[in-house]
Length: 259
Image 1 (cartoon, one colour):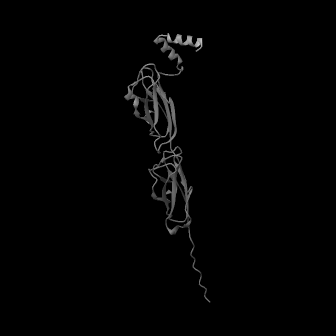
Image 2 (cartoon, helix red, strand yellow):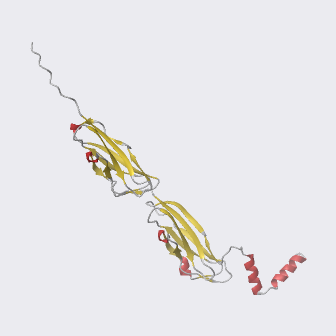
Image 3 (tube, helix red, strand yellow):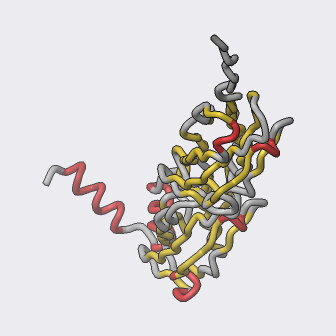
């Protein structure tokens, strides 16, 4: 061993315990906290409001202090804290973390409505609170109708009612539908023969179906709109409807020719 290295070791060995503790603190990064969460921030991104729950996040709190650190029950803060939930709190049961030891807290995003949400998870400690910033956005889908617009094959009005099937699909994420209605000046000429869509939730890339009936009382063209309310950001979906009732053949009596 070289003489300079030997001298450094001799000087360090001669330091008091208090001096060694101070030296260790200086060696820590300037941003390090005694009790530190990992991750200190996390975002789930876009989560389907009507889909499976996003995976739980595990936040690990570690004691980087030079002595045991007391820790308390984890809490969520902020105006959107109700959109999140703590499902397991190993820090509350740990009570005290020895030097270098950790405890885990599990959090889930449990949205009650569409939109962005943020919260802060805090594990309190006299050595300094461990705080992790969390965020997520709950999204709903975009509805599409097939066919769109909705049309009926022309036929003589006296043939009676006709029916046209319609599918409503949710793109991107799930969508909760309200009660479907018919609107427009000629809405009374149309009706729902069956409806599996009203007040249901359509999962992402799935669909529901309905049958529209056209029952003309005379010849002519009729038009209306199918209105589909939902929790989609583009609600309501309005689909044009049109149908033409033909007058049919005209019966004429041929004149009698007398020879």
